[in-house]
Amino acid sequence: MSKKEQHAFSNVLSINPYKGAYVSAVSNFLNETTSATYSKEQYVISYLNTKSFINSHISVSKNIPEEDLYDAIYNKAYDELGLDQAIMYQLQYIETFDALEEENRSFHVFIIDPMVVDDVFKDVVEKVKYVDYILPSPLLYKSLYSKDLIESSGVHCFVYFQENDTFITIYNEKNFIYTKSINYSFLQMHERFCEIYGELVEYEDFINFLSNEDLKTTENIYKSHIIKLYKEIFSNINDILTYVKRALDIEKIECVYIDTQLKSLTKLDEMAEVELSIKSSSFNFDYGFESDDHYVDHFHSLMYIYTTLPQEDKYECNFTTYFRPPSFTKRASGRAILLAAASLVLAFLYPASYWTLTYAQSLQHKLLEDEYKSVHNIKVTREATVKNREADKTKVSTLLAAEENEYIDKKNTLIKIHDVKVNYPMKAELIHRLTKDLNRYSVKIESAFYSEAKESEKSSSLIKELKLGLVSSNDKKITDLIKYLTKVYEGKFHFSIAEISYENESKLYFGELKVSLL
Image (tube, rainbow, N blue to C red):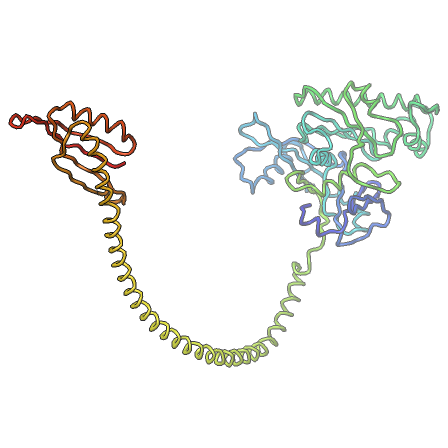
């Protein structure tokens, strides 16, 4: 049952069809009821005992299309299992995955005679009318893995004693691989016990002993005979497990989970662990449910969990033929009634809708006319305002242009005044400072030239440079001067001279000293 389906039902009704036991589950509270009745608000789930169906393994080619898969499995089951051709069996299957199998797909098939299903659920259907889900009982254990109630790795064996059936089921890595019914249901155990005991014992007395007596502490006369019966059962189980391990290539069974439909004081798991030499445990899982004082069969808890699982976490293997009635709109009669009702409604609806639409159109037209008048007045007013604003903008733009021109003229004038006030005194001061140093080294100035230039087209920084024509009677005086200037004005000016030339006529040395302001 999907999450969407869970919200559509008020409760889950789980059924043991063999005992006529009904348990209603509402909000994780399980309550056994004897008054189960039809209700479209409840989800109904039940199961089939292992001995009710045929279980086998079928392989078919991987080349078979998905739409033909059911027919291929059905036909092969008839051929391989020798089924009675006169009976139209119900067949369900689950796929198993074998990594070593390259050409075929493998399936576990569950086959049952429809007459058996009808016989088992005859009384149930009379009460509740429908059953949403009927699955083979061994597949219920899948819910234990999906809810993480047991470890998902390893091989696990499940043994469950019921009144009408006792069966062994094996899961490997949380997947179903084997099941078998054994001849030790409570009814069969009672017959065998009477043979061992040598006298006829009432079935109720036998069941009362199994439920209320602990074999460890009881002194009842039946004790030794019950122990002998259990040893016989475990011997039979051990033979089956030995066969299964060999047939399915199982190295080790991690744990045997064993319990009964009855509330039992005897710890069968302890007895199983001794007899089978395999770790054993009871079905006393933490299902997370509450119940009344009555003991609830574990299968009811498993069935309720199964209904809450998402589709991908459970096996799709539904044998039900008792489907709930379709909704009113999905029935042929319901559709006919709805169609007739719709026709009548349409017949009266057309003139009424025509009159309504005509009135609505006229009303809408009047509203639009009123809205147009209001919008038109606003439009005329805003157009006049825009024209006034545009005239004001033109005036302001003219005044702004005049002010900008006046600003540019004043800015240029101020730049010229700043150049005269700052740059010229600076040039004079620079020449004055250098003249003292020139006189110290007896070097004279022949010429002086000051220039400013931008570093690049994109840059606004200026390169300020002073070129001095030097004259001296000794070239060493010029070089000593440059060394001195470089040392004294380091970080303020940069000095450079390309060459020092000598003229024979005047017997003097000449050179152009470049002074760059840093």
